[in-house]
Length: 80
Image 1 (cartoon, rainbow, N blue to C red):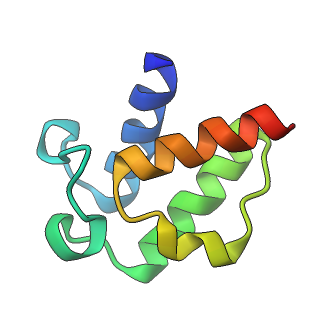
Image 2: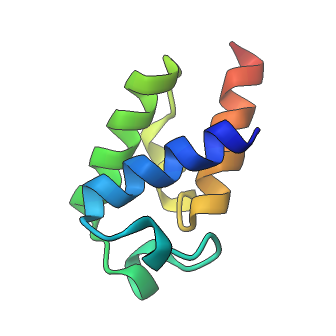
């Protein structure tokens, strides 16, 4: 499942314009990394497109760290 981790990190990195090495997996993306709600929506859209899954918008508030996003993607892929 390392692929998902590096892919999610790549998407997050691209959207928030930070180096992957500057994004700790358990850091709060908005409070600690500098993302904002528009970036979160952009990350959500990119993930849905990449993995061909639908993530309900109410799940957005749970997407606070890279690790939580990875878990959410893995769960969504299992439900497909």
